[in-house]
Image 1 (cartoon, one colour):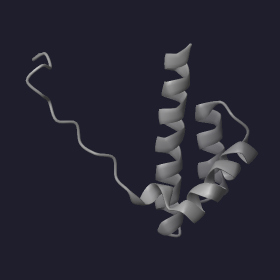
Image 2 (image 1 turned 45 degrees about the horizontal axis):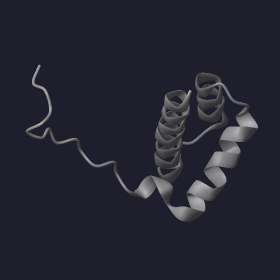
Image 3 (image 1 turned 180 degrees about the vertical axis):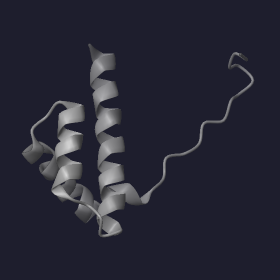
Image 4 (image 1 turned 180 degrees about the horizontal axis):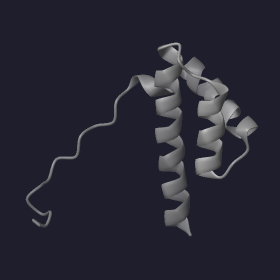
Length: 76
C-alpha cells in the first residue's frame, strides 16, 4: 500500500508541475484541471487546492534531476 501512496504522490507532483508550466505560459484552463482531476481520480476542486500552495512556493520551478545509471545498476 505504501508504494501506491508513493506513486500517487509522484503522479500528483508531475501533474502540478505541468499545470504550473501551463499557468506560467498563460495557457492554463479549467479543461486542463478537469482532465487532471479525472486522470488522478480526485475532484476538480482538489486540483485547484494543489495549485494554490504550489504557485506561491514555486514548486514547478525546479526540474527533476536526471537518472544516472551507476555501476551497481543492471544493464538491459
